Image 1 (cartoon, helix red, strand yellow):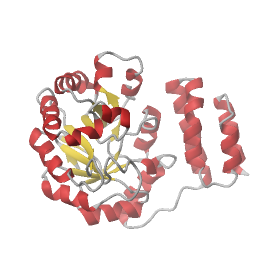
Image 2 (image 1 turned 90 degrees about the vertical axis):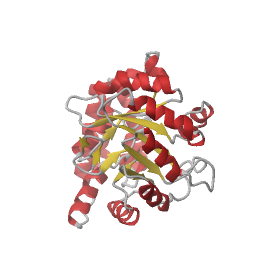
Image 3 (image 1 turned 180 degrees about the vertical axis):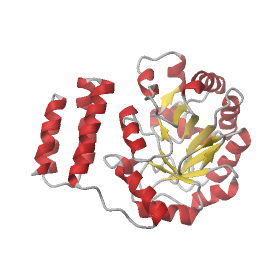
Length: 317
């Protein structure tokens, strides 16, 4: 898949997720074969005013390539300025116009921009005019229940200069409930000539193949399904290439990756933050495994990374 002048090694991309797609997790996903990673969503205004926590989100690993930064905001001038400021650090500049969180929407940002298509277009034009790297947009099927405005919104983004769009098949009012509408992905693909990346309800390699076949999208953005399951990336790539469904990873492989994740978190975030943030990741990794309930209880009480590593032995029986 090609986005602007950027040639990707595949068509699976990592969707931005707050509290998940930090640098350690992106490293793991890149090792599994993801074609394009993305930072957590970051406020353009926070970058402008040099917010203390913003630089952590923008941190990039050595050799991490390619990488998109996802910005949100509603001021075209600020979005253009921040795009220019960050261009040298990232390979793609992505704009979030799909976040459903009330605080974001009340500020006229995220999915609220689907109700302001003219303003949304000016934002993209302002960014495209300031940078040479591709500018992309992520949005939803529509804002309110029953809406399906994504095709016309996608066309407006293309006309404004967007190099690709990612579409989540749910409305803002759905958040992440109900079923994603894949038919709207097909409609978006038919409405534009730029690459369309589908998002929503891809939880297995078979889901990925069905989405590609039934909608004609160029790529797939994996999100919640890779929390605690980065192997989904590798398994999906192999399935799409060969038609043969790879086995789920054995317990020892799972444990090795958990140990590596802990080590990466300590390296990049320090002991205290690593332990706190790994609790949720280890809960995702171990969901459904034998003895996982007792394991998660103990993990939530652990205070050091050494304790976390020691607790992994509980899962070995």
